[in-house]
Amino acid sequence: MKIRESGAALSRIVQIGSRLAQLERETGERYLAFNRGVNAVVGIDLREVVAGIDFNARGMQTYPPAAGMPDLREAIAAEYFGDPAEAAHVLVTAGGMNALDLVLQTLDVGRLYLPAYHWGSYGHIATIRGVGVGEYGSRGELAERIDELCGSAVLLCDPGNPLGEKYDDNEQLALVRRLSDADVAVIVDCPYRRVFAGAEDGFYARLARMPNVVITESFSKSVGLSGQRIGFVHASDPALRDELAVRLMYCTNGVNAFAQQLVLRLLATSAGRRAVDRFKLATQEGIARNIAYLRGRGLLATEFYTESEPRGIFVIVNRSEDELLARRIGSVGLSFFTRSRKAEVSGYARVCVSVPHDDFVRYFSRV
Image (cartoon, rainbow, N blue to C red):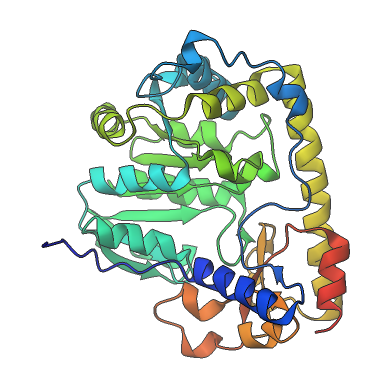
């Protein structure tokens, strides 16, 4: 049969995971999967939270509303935007990738501009949806190219992937406002931000007031629910929101009811907030210790953080993917996260630092 080939490729991260599993079978040795983007310092303890869910309730056994359960949308609006009225601008999605895909298939833009170092899935989703891909080298470069960017979209990731770089919030907001005011569509993707912050964070509320900004979010990283595949889109533009709602309905017919009920309880009940706070505290401490260890050993590639600080769940080390694999450490070569700078970064790799500190030290002590 005839097919429409997308031109996109399978994830390099998935391929590396398969290779690690094969090596473990062949050698009988354990390899650590620092290539993955999963918070694994601790898992979130859901026992007390799940105990309050009535699986026999009608809302659990019927199709959920296409845009998301009203109570969950209100809880997201209160937690992320500090304003229950923002619930009308929130659409619940089947994870962060679904949110990004919906936005890229809906925006009428000729090109998506990505950072020089970016998560490969951004480009692959754009390719599948027929959106051209460009790049920018720095936030300062974006500010200088605003006239050129009109009619296109710009993506910002905070903190970044693969570098894990964190920029000053006020500087970021000023840049986003300049882009939005110039009629440039700005997609702000923040799957890692809320690992390090809570409801006190005013970043989202300030973004929400900008007309050409779309926020995509996921609960995979911030509350450790990668397996539940749930996230959201926030769009203040009513025409965009209406079209997103139509497409969301026909691609999901409503996001998994259990995942929605679970996130609702994590955001809006005392048991859920306790579970989230414990998860975040342990995760933050583990990440900080691992980054400090790499810095102390001279393994952190500090040259990538001259205008930012390493604060995400990933960082770059000054060792290659093959060097690390020889020490039974799974990683992803930095060259797989860039289109234009492959040759100059062949000796660097991205590693996940959201892992137990003892495991991290035991394996990196061999490097």
